[in-house]
Image (cartoon, rainbow, N blue to C red; front, side, top):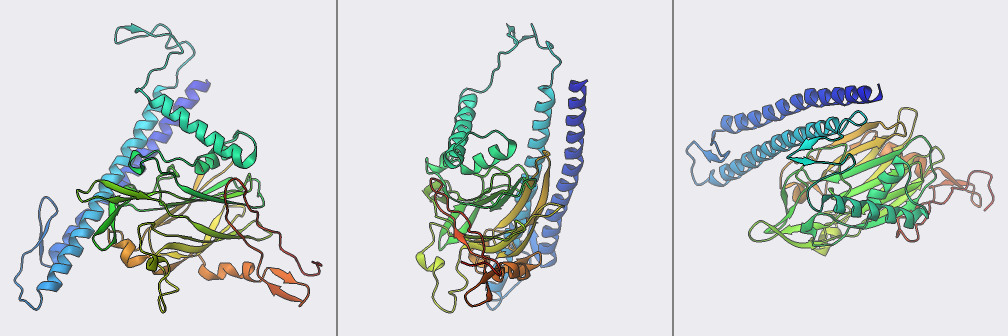
Amino acid sequence: MVVVSRQGSVERDAAKIADSGAHDIRSAQQAVTDAIADAEADGFDVGEDLAVTDSGTFDSDTAAARGAAAAEHAEYIRWHAEQLVQTDTLVGRQLSEKAAELEGIRFDGEDEGRVADGVIKAVDFKQGPPGQVESEADRRQNEKDAFKEVFGREPVSAADWTTAAALDPNSYDPNTLGLGPEIKVVRIEPVPGQGVVRASQWIEQRDVISGPFKRDFGNTRVADPNFDPADTKVTTYIDYENGLLVMRQNPSIELNESGGPGQVKVGIPDAVVQQSSDGAVRIKYEAGNPFAPGIAQDPPWPLDKNPWTVNGDLVFTPNADGVRVDGTRTNYPSMEVYQDLPDGSTRTVLIDPAVAGNSTGPMVNLPEHHDVGMGGRAFEPFDTGAWNPKYDVQVPLPAAEAGPVDSPPAVPQAPRQGTQV
């Protein structure tokens, strides 16, 4: 009965994926069609290879503007075409995973003596691609070691293993040439029952413009509730069960002259963290492109308040319905936030796409910000939540800067009205 129940559950999950996946693919196809129609309405021809050419006549006064418009249409069409391919790939992968999961559900002894490819297999014998089991085992051990370094014990629960993956100081993409991420942490007060909040800021395109005549690789994917913390640009985890915030910046890979992987560098993220009495966590964060010139991260006046970095000021507030996110952040890159609850379910908290979904995004959008949720109104409890007994006035809640995993700092408790310090 247990086996039948598991099979039914997996089949229902697969049906949901197929239904929602078909909708997502149709929407992506329509977006490509609309982008082509926009170009044609603007007087351009779009070829089968999606190349955009001007079908009209123009003079020297309008040539530059028409050329720029053609490039913009071409980039817009290319981005939506990439989204279609990524969506189709993601749905196919998810269905393949469910098919493999269903294939792996067996009644006791069902596989005994089964003959495959002329070979009689023992019941517990498992085969796989050479090196796959070993590499996964190595990664699991790395996660276990990383978790133990912070907590002094090995991971046991689902929340433990989720956080262990974010703490893993290794990169598994061969294009990173063995360079690992930069990871910082800070201890917070646990809020049991809120699970782990996972936030990813990632680049949807294969590659983007990062500077004059420079391009960096993106993540080439769409939003994914099962994202790998190593497959992002910046990853933030809030483990409410264990009381830890993780800030992770993954290596950046520059394109070489032939369009393949070139130099690899990793930046160091910064985060200042506060926590209110209801468990809400405020994170002021910044992560710069390690290939960018110093002026990008520290521009002169009057641009000093708008550096070309991934930065923001976000508040994650736990409540009975789960966590909500408010604050401000840069218009680029895309951001996804999920909450893994102790009952095994995952809820989507936020999907906030980049304002410019094309390769010009970092250059154009990083200096600009937008509100998330209620915006800056979410900061008030943190700006006035503590008390200075000497002057009898409200002051900001104390904060802690995220630090190294071998000696995690902790967010201090706030003095309250009537408390002597």
